Image 1 (tube, rainbow, N blue to C red):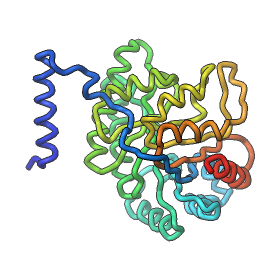
Image 2: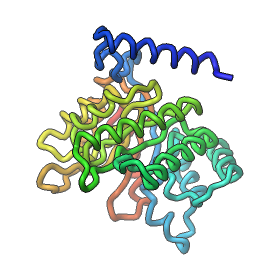
Image 3: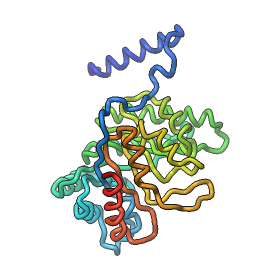
Length: 302
């Protein structure tokens, strides 16, 4: 039986289609808009498991996702971001519930998770696999209690035009966002190269995906223009999650320290309310360096 919410959504979409055919509804009237109902900024700190990637991928290190959660608790964080890359391939519900329980006992929220999807593939087996991966992790996120998944748009494939690539990405994201909404999980699109390498390109996709369960994962280190902070300011009003790296780099790819105070000024201006997630990608030992940068973030957001 069709649920009431599904009926009303379908009825709205049919009505919208009729209005569009009559020329009375423009695309921008149902495009995603900045999150406007946030009255004041509020920040909670988390750490991405990606920061521990070398340790989590080295069995001899003795570091597991539970170790990572324990370290987040020692840093007095509010949350822990459990990147999907470090879970068993065919993870079972019991494993997810065990991690959820462990985080809860440590006083931590599971702030989110992240996947490595690519919706640039044309129809076929590869695309079907990417859709299935995303839907599987929507289910996993719901079991973990993770409210948001960081997702990618993907990359343009050989022989496929930029226009067709955009359509493929929007269609893929729209499909999985519908599934995400049915499970109470948000999807946050990261500025991560390809069509999302600029604020303009990212927002073009965001505006064309019609879903209340969709927004932006602001990554402070993934724009490489002459105006990195200006681009971050453009996407901040749409942010559902914010991942902060310790360096940025412009067109010359030269790394310079992130201006954390400026990042928080941008988030403040956007009235961002949510997790600020440290994502440490440098070469030093993350178990030593992450606590240092967590304290730097605390100072910058004060």
